[in-house]
Length: 255
Image (cartoon, rainbow, N blue to C red):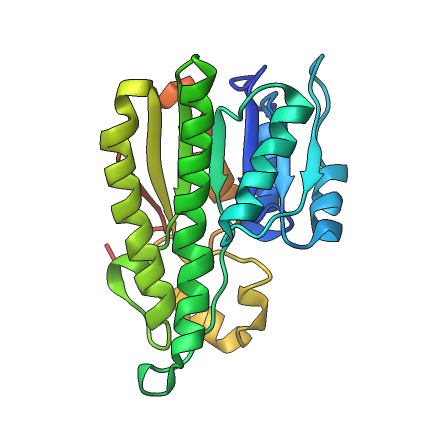
């Protein structure tokens, strides 16, 4: 079934767009007519995603850029590149860039804990702030910011103190941004994936994945496309009255 064209003439920024959920989100947004800025620290991965994007709408244009979302000067440079290339701010931003440094709490180093918070929580803060500022400065209000949380931010997970804390923080950040930015027509929502089959889960032994799948009411791990579909909905006007929400994409895990 062809994707609806809900995002024609929309400029969308996706961080962590070089693979996994990020790549699926970029593909889905492009199928719906958006021009996509694929952002990743690995420019080769970003370019690989770029080559996979749909270009079926007149005026649709995609670019791949590199940025370190944990550094304000890098985010500032990214926004300047987007503005000079498109002469407009992105109206949709999806903060998907994330890392893990899994270790049990008793052995978790301060450096590992901080590095996860820098990318997973400070990154969405910097991008949310920069995109919102650029929209407000443009004088044309309206937009959708989607932050990638995790079900782990709600329920915790063994060996993931830093990851769980960062993703719980993303929800608090998003809910506050939603309250502050609503007057500018900017909606902010969080998507909480459960266990999704991505390069991150490829490192997990199959017997562990089978056990996890057995705990999921829908009987399978999620696919990146399952998350991308929700992001496309939240990016579009179909969700025009939804802000400050957290949408779980878990197949029913932890109900």
